[in-house]
Amino acid sequence: MKIKVFGWLLFFDRLNTKDMLVRRHWRSPLDDNICVICNAYVYEYRAHLFFECNFSCRVWNYLQIDWSHGSNIQECISQARQRFGHPFFFEVMLTAAWNIWILRNGRTFRGIRATFVAWRCNFVHDILLLSHRLKDSFRHRLVDWVNSLM
Ligand SMILES: [Zn+2]
Image (cartoon, rainbow, N blue to C red):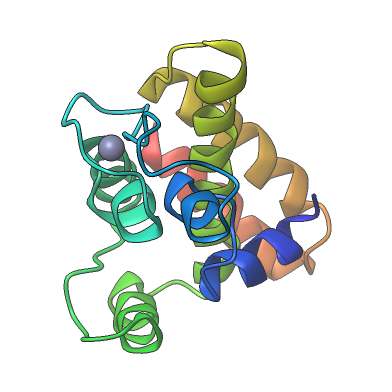
């Protein structure tokens, strides 16, 4: 899945999270529909998996992306983008969320434990790969920012 398609599905809440599969009657509400990347025994739905889960909170803290302002997803994104203060907000945010989704799928379908170290390794790999498609000045700023995270 291309990351832009993923972004679209995330934004419009069309990803196959467990709550979505229940809503589409592809899963029973009686199945195990708990988030697989934290130990909170919380139903897996978009807001939990990507924004409220302990795992995701650690990711956003690490990236210094603050989702706590705004009353709907558009407002949250706009506020988070402003507060983040770098021109590559969407690249970072989508790559981060994409890698949360990848780890969640690894855990769901292959039983691989989701760890922050694995997330960070995949995130850095993907964002540096993506940086090659950016203009020079933009790329240098992104690479400097990624290095400042280490
Ligand atoms: Zn969770």
